[in-house]
Amino acid sequence: MANFFPRWTNWLPIKLVVCGILLVCGLTGATWYYVTPKYTKVRYQPIQPVPFPHDIHVTQLGMDCRYCHSFVEMAAQSNVPNTQICMNCHTQVQKDNPKLEPVRESWKSGNPIDWVWIHRTVDYVYYNHAAHVNRGISCFSCHGPVNHMSAVYQAKPHSMAWCLECHRHPENFLRPEDQVFNLDWKPEDVKPVEFVEKYGHPSDAREDFAKKKKLTQTEIGQTLKERWNINPPTNCQGCHR
Ligand code: HEC
Ligand code: HEC
Ligand code: HEC
Ligand code: HEC
Ligand code: HEC
Image (cartoon, rainbow, N blue to C red; front, side):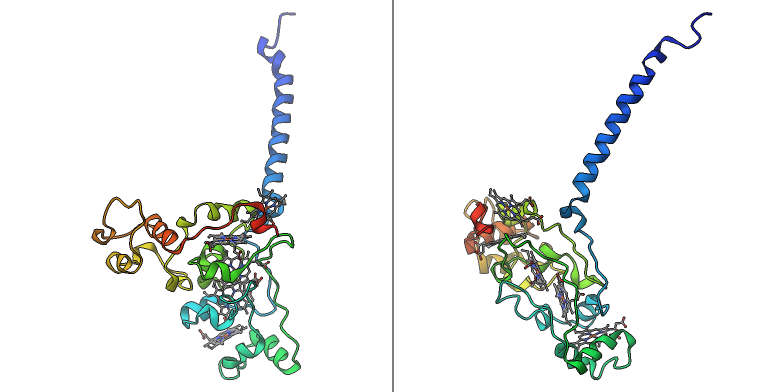
């Protein structure tokens, strides 16, 4: 009998095996990469005892972050508000809303509400809120658009590589100190003439920023970095003390 199958099919089994091995390796690698904690933490959104809507309180009602997270400028840790803060309004507003039952319950009993902690650095990492918030880094750079979240989720990886990305190039994130709590701020909002009057130019500027219509994030960031002498640690002891 003549060759029934064409010649190339002799190689078919081995090709299938090789493809199979590559596929398995690829999938293992990808799972390793994406399923290790760094990556699964992004979008982490636990169910809270009370579905607290940041969008309503911040964007709709115009509340400042510091009304509730009152230590964020002063301490290493930010704080989550106690029940009394909620009851400043909710003894009057929405006092029959069933979503607020755990808040009323906590107020009566004196037991704090068990909020689920979302962002958490490991023990061997030193992190300090005040050191960032007072140096022109907005909540937005690390927590995303919380002011538009109906429930908080983790927006950024908070991995070591992520911390370092900013520590190496803080100019990509720095903003005027009075805009740290304005999560909707954009570089285009800056008025060049006023900005230059207040902060000047970086030493290597090749044009007059005041004559420009708009400033870019890099132009703003570079100016502030020099003006404030910003120099975040990139050595190991900076964060692992
Ligand atoms: C009316 C009070 C209130 C205001 C105003 C408020 N928050 Fe919150 N925030 C809370 C409460 C309560 C929680 C805990 C429940 C939750 O995570 O939804 C929380 C949680 C958070 C968390 C997650 C904390 C964790 O567990 O890791 C972040 C981040 C946060 N807020 C950022 C902000 C920012 C940024 C602003 C200003 C734009 C702001 N908050 C304004 C009450 C408030
Ligand atoms: C400055 C006043 C004020 C404070 C403080 C405040 N709230 Fe509210 N909250 C409001 C108002 C006003 C509304 C109603 C908004 C609306 O009807 O659109 C509301 C609505 C709500 C709702 C209902 C949302 C819905 O979809 O039905 C929840 C839940 C809530 N607040 C939880 C909290 C918690 C928890 C705290 C404390 C961490 C808190 N609030 C602090 C003013 C406040
Ligand atoms: C440079 C990044 C960065 C900035 C800027 C930042 N945070 Fe955080 N935030 C973190 C990290 C990291 C954690 C986890 C801290 C921990 O485990 O102690 C965290 C945790 C929190 C928590 C949970 C409580 C705590 O301290 O662990 C709240 C609430 C919070 N941030 C609110 C804010 C608010 C409000 C702002 C803006 C005023 C802000 N953060 C700015 C990185 C940042
Ligand atoms: C978006 C930018 C940004 C991110 C993200 C960021 N940092 Fe920073 N960090 C800064 C800036 C700016 C400073 C202030 C440098 C200065 O004052 O010269 C700073 C300072 C610090 C300092 C020194 C402050 C002190 O108290 O000694 C430590 C430690 C630090 N950061 C840790 C971290 C860790 C850990 C993370 C990640 C969880 C992180 N940072 C993420 C921008 C950032
Ligand atoms: C800007 C802050 C920062 C600096 C600087 C830094 N680290 Fe880290 N490091 C972190 C954070 C945050 C984590 C935790 C990462 C996580 O939870 O995913 C970490 C985790 C680690 C881990 C645990 C393994 C891992 O990847 O989770 C090792 C090992 C480590 N760092 C070594 C170093 C060494 C060595 C240096 C100096 C070359 C260094 N770090 C500098 C912030 C920093």
